[in-house]
Length: 296
Image (cartoon, rainbow, N blue to C red; front, side):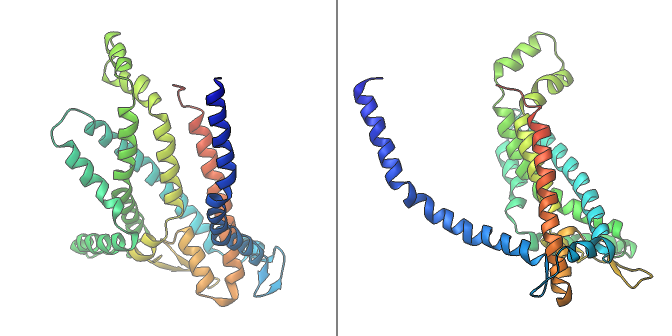
């Protein structure tokens, strides 16, 4: 290395070391106060009832005395599987269509992306009005059955997320080298073979990102669930437990924590389990899809 370049690099390193705390410490402090400290406090409170330490009692109650958590977990899992598949398949299909040389594609991209800019509460009220208006034609509402509520949530989630995933897929498709596609076409690959053996393997990084986003967003859905169905309809069990048929995990945790002051420790324990569950599923998904990516 030239002495002048080496001296410039040493000077840059000294400047970085000098001003590193100035730029990093405020962000680190905000992250500690806003996330780390509340998270640690939350984990501690999950072992307490009010201010009394009760050990694993709250966690045991979730699986022995609370019948709502299992139903919410099952319902959230089913919703997540359906939403992840539909959002990614439709988003990828729309991205393929909009990367063709068709007039007006920029307008369509903007229109498809716009729902992602609308807040979940507003979307919930808008789709509640629309879907209830349609269901009233057959004298039903979203809260008449858990099936109606389930598909209402799926429709809302797809409408909000497809445009965002479409943008990511478009970026991945446009990043595929044109020479690679031309070479495949020269070798006689048809559209199906081109999609299966060239396009999908080359956009695996985009698939990884989109699957991760849709998976985590679906699992931690709260505001749309609260507004669209509120967990209704209710089912009364023989032991007196009220099962909210369309209640997902995030709403279940909220209701456990705020509807009964005596169960706040259990609500906090559910939140800790929810965090571990989402983190584990997300990490497994990232590892599974990342291993299938093509090294460019």
